[in-house]
Image (cartoon, rainbow, N blue to C red):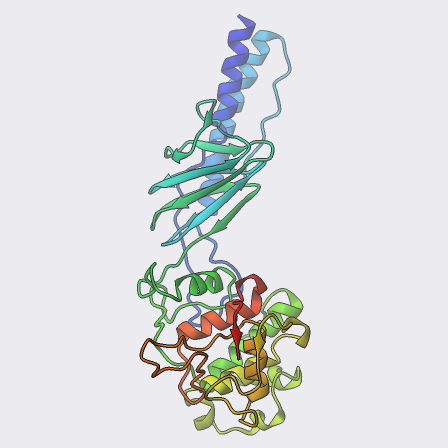
Length: 359
């Protein structure tokens, strides 16, 4: 009898871990966000969990009194919910828990074991069952791939990449991973919640804003800069000049100059001082003069060559006809937003930088 009652108590306690559905929210800053776009609905989720815990705890107390035992302490879970997009994934490690609330997901178990605590059995590589709670055991490592529009609740050691919400950034595009990574690191956002406009251009003022925000994120760990009250870019421009990212020449530029599209060469110049020089360690052999359209004495050539040598820039690949030479930079072209995401991601993450030789 006691064994049976203990099993019932355990089953009830496991039910405490089943989360409720929560709605998702999103950021609307067209250029830079300050944190990952964590989803809304936490209050509703917490309320549902509290109600469930209260009801089941009363049942556990009654059962325990029959057994003449103290009721076991019930842990109150505090899950976070995420609405995910194309390319989303989650890495489940020891002590982490994940529950699929809607959509579909597939798990690849790479090490250790994962338990489906809802049914009490080990989980194998394959599809997750909706509303079941999966927990990483000792030394567990599992990668969970999620379909666009899925919603998950996670607790503990789960590293979530929410994917890419932009419908104009397809999975097979060359810039997909860079846009996704930069978005998940809160370095960039779209021109709208669902559009990134990868072929769109960037103005000088927008480039200054991004450089200022990257500098503050690197040095302070968060972005607190806000748009100016009268002219939106003044706070970023003042910060960039004060912090030595830009010279005082930029402080006296006209509104017309600041609102013109920025060239690829000037974008590199603006971003060059957003990070310390120590972040530009050389990993590539790029001979002076090897970039076919950037002469040694060209404007901003030092910054451009530094970005090549540190793997932030690679230049164009040579075509089969020889019409496009390897490493071409196109310094006077307007920079595209897809290229902006790539450069920012490689600046922030040295593992994303490219190794090559250009002689």
